Image (tube, rainbow, N blue to C red):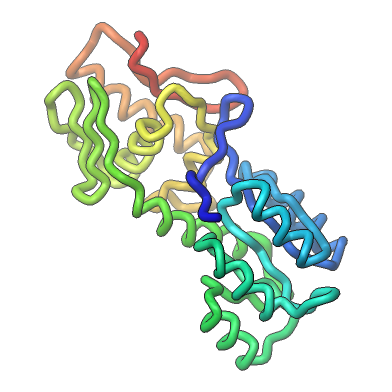
Amino acid sequence: MIPQTLFLLTEGFIIIKILMIEDDYEIAEILTQYLNKFDIKVTSVEEPYMGLSHLTQEDFDLIILDLTLPGIDGLEVIPKIRKDSAIPIIVSSARDDITDKVIALERGADDYMPKPYDPRELVTRIKTILRRTQANRPNTSSKLFDLNIEARSVIFKNVMLELTAAEFEILSLLIQHSDSAISREQLLYDAEHIDDNSSIKNIDVIISRIRQKLFLIDPKNTYIKPVRGIGYLLTEKV
């Protein structure tokens, strides 16, 4: 089953859903807590067959897969996943044998991370893979906004906006999730042209610049609204 959408809208903000198949409870807990800081919800299971069962019952955006698992080796799990799904797979394993890496990638894994590694690197790998997935999203048009991903352009009320790379990425995310709040952390996480180590206050600065450009075209309405405790949402209901 191929996930129908990259993001799940829950309680008004965007969450990335990951399935982790990992039999080391301590590692699973550390990664789950760390990824949660980036609005990444992790469902962790120890048994590979339980993980395969989850895939038939729920949509996920990415899988983190260990290789040394009870019942069946992780290398055998990959083709079972690929039989029914194109979901991205990151192999996370203490086995650093080049043969394991080659086999994992040949069987359909998207990345291979030998343990131990810094969780920050895992976030970056997830970000890179999901950004590539996002690039295949269709363009989005509405009454006021015409978003063209390939051309990296936004037309607002029939006027082409002059946007920096970071402004385009932030505005395109807001347009694609119109009327749904997106956290500052998520905007920072998904913007390729904003450094991962930047302060989330940078998002406020970029949002302010975008608002000013929209204001020059339509000074009567505010389309990007703050959502207290979360971030921002774009709405055409002004």
